[in-house]
Amino acid sequence: MSIIQLAFPPEIKHNVLKETTPKALWEKLENIYVSKSLTNRLCLKMELYQLKMEMRGDLHDHINKFNQLVSQLLNADDKLSDEEQALLLLASLPRSFKALVQTL
Picture 1 (cartoon, rainbow, N blue to C red):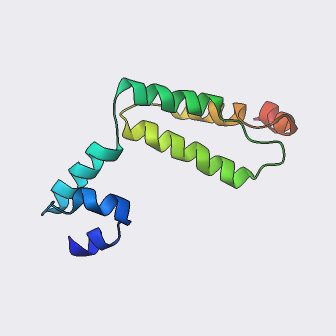
Picture 2 (picture 1 turned 180 degrees about the horizontal axis):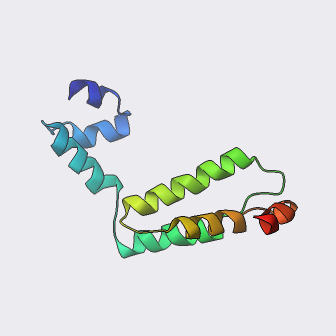
């Protein structure tokens, strides 16, 4: 427990200092940082659906941001099919990827 708690930055550490087991620590962190409310899921979906890669942006950074949003939605008990994820990712690419998107 001590090793895990040492890895936290100070702003998080004070929230979990009283926890005595890894399970209790994990549950406390989930309660604080993983909101499964309808509002949270709606905000995450809106951010995912509005995600657009900048014209000269880095594709790797864009895919990482996309995957981060998908992971947050999955953690909030929201389901996205593989097909929906693929379509959303392709739709988020700039017009310079049009030929690739149409080919796929």
